[in-house]
Amino acid sequence: MAGEIRVIPLEGIPELEEGDDLGALLAAAAERTGGVEPGDVVVVAQKAVSKVEGRVVSLDDVEPSDRARQLTGPDGDPRHVEVILRETKEVVRSRPPLVITETHHGFVCASAGVDASNAKGAGTLVLLPVDPDASARRLRERLHELTGVWLAVVVSDSFGRAWRQGTTDVALGVAGFSPLRDLRGTPDAAGRELHTTQIAVADELAGAAELVLGKARQVPAALVRGVHLDGDGSAQELLMPRERDLFR
Amino acid sequence: MAGEIRVIPLEGIPELEEGDDLGALLAAAAERTGGVEPGDVVVVAQKAVSKVEGRVVSLDDVEPSDRARQLTGPDGDPRHVEVILRETKEVVRSRPPLVITETHHGFVCASAGVDASNAKGAGTLVLLPVDPDASARRLRERLHELTGVWLAVVVSDSFGRAWRQGTTDVALGVAGFSPLRDLRGTPDAAGRELHTTQIAVADELAGAAELVLGKARQVPAALVRGVHLDGDGSAQELLMPRERDLFR
Image (cartoon, rainbow over all chains, first blue to last red; front, side, top):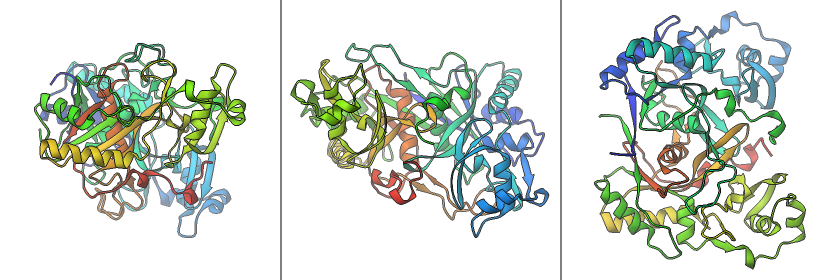
């Protein structure tokens, strides 16, 4: 139907290991749904990207610092906290076992995005990609090689929010489109100006994809079809500049 | 396709006035797309709900208080700030022209959700519904009367976020489902526990719908089809309890 959006799960992707060709696995999964189309967005969970990029740490290899021990709650593992601190530019809030930090990329999130669940083996942690925009660009290029189509790509993760319960998926990395849709200066339905509106379309795409991803099934990615996107950009544009940040 | 989600714009809804039968207009718009199905979610923009509920204020009727004058920036209108303060339980941050407040409902957002754009006439403001959950429940009941189907309903609005640029749409009111999907205690793909994950599925539905709503066209609502929802609840569950709030 004209104007509608489809969110199509990319299924049948096996447990991932460092060095796996994620682009080829996504292209094959998309082919099984009928193939990609120009304008499609591939949203892929950060954890899938991190695993193929080898962003996995074994707790056995970690020696916790004094700072890590201080920030660890009574039931926590100071080695886990140490890994979080290594991924951290600045601790924004800490109330063990919760620690909210700014990552080296500039994302403000719980545990610097370091996650234990879904990691292979009980003693391993998955870190965020070193450069999620670069990860998205590489996937975009690989998918173009394999399908002949230039797709938009989002690398997503589940973040908590200030003042609201529950997580929503947001964009950590993007390629092939502008993550903010700028409505500033465009007329509204009443013919007057919309003064200040920028829509974080990359985050809404990530959240829409999460509705089919599911944490407990092996669906690490989705195609979103029918969204009009334009421009080009970086997920860094989604970060609030420090001088405009009212909340730390 | 099995497992896919569709986001279907509800188009052709005219400019709304107090007392309009929004449920009937939505049902007619849905009928033009082929009709509703059990399990469908109707996401409707707060502004449409507020207009039919008469939550519109004329600036000519407002006398600003001293507090409103203090919080007004050099280019602002103290009457506009006065209306924001009347909708406010607590001012969380203020840096004119920006004011972040907690509304009487408990939502933390810019300008207490008071909005000038899209209001009819230049001198009017649109307020949030008095009780967005009740608005959602009334729409759900009216849609059931008209279609024979019990639908889920979300009343949505565009909110900014701490630390991230741009707005995403979130749920202010819900009916017919639980707005948080609780994965706590369910096994992950590796067979271990997901300890703490709650997904704000109502907010992701609102964001997905925003991708077709568009601020500048007259599409105040969308159907989201194919999302498995369960339970029942209130959008108040999406509010972070004050004792767990680290950010004010």
